[in-house]
Image (cartoon, rainbow, N blue to C red):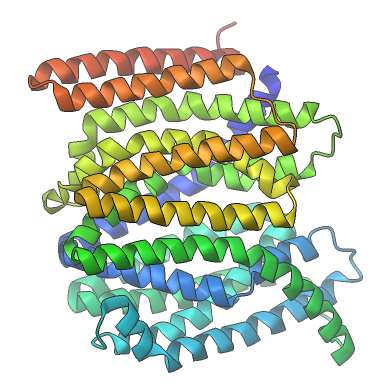
Length: 479
């Protein structure tokens, strides 16, 4: 049991190390945006990025994910032809996606910003859309051929080189620099991933028209299925940001995006590591009595609690400093969002742990219905929260949403897939939830600054000691 948990931690550490470097570059980029663009600039950046991701995600037909499925484990004699077909498909989709973005640029500006002032931005963005569609497929090829080290290095180099363009572009062009930066990053990514792809030294083969049509139907057919749930997630995020921008302003949207980014990108780096390592592990699990699968799920949840619990408490204690360091004093209203929404991140740990089982073992109908239901719940709870109490309401809505997500996912995996979370894990998880709630209540109810910070600090010390004790047990550092 300890060995499995040790392997989980080692895998998460490996992928987490790569993500940490990417995270550091992302923090630097956000800091530059906060200082030189301000809250309105960060709001603009958030809307542009969300729209960009929505365009790319909805028009790529799930090709990056489908490529991984179709190329993984391919025989040596079929791989060269599949690579040629994949590259042709990526080029066609890139041209198509860019064309849609360019032609409907004014409409996109009207929908996103309620005016046509940013038509120029979406026309330029079409270049970045074209580049992203192609580079993402090269990335999938590296992953599907198990060249994960090359994939990691490519991501790191692309991120670091991208920063070299971010600084001068934001400084000299301000809002326009956001678009110019996306284009420059697109060129960097496609160049880096292409060079690493060429380093595989796989000689492609020409394909006939019939071979291309047959294989393309299979790849795109699976891709459309994979694309639907991801598209719904992007769409719900886009609609929420549109609502906040319309009924609030870009400044409020900037606060929301900065808080969301801190919690769901910087703090929740554990989820990125889970998606790279945990998902493939449970996908390969074919044990019919679910015993091995249950062990994997329980180990992952336990390790996740060890890592995430003390991190969230530290964030609560130092939220003021975190906001100023990552952004600026202009973003201090984000602190309230962090303190109220952090419980939702802990709920997310549980819901994601069992949710990956649904992706790996559930039927297409279950996956799609889940995506539709939960994204609808996401929109309803967050819009209602903002309508009732602004940014604070959105923060509370985030925790409510992930609690609903947790209960729903566990019910499905319990009833349909035979997943059983061990009683000791459930008791530990519930205890941690109550401790987080207690610390949040203390933070808001106690007037004496030093007393409440002192109490929370003592709880953090105890939580850290508990985590280190169990890490010691897993790794057997203390003989």
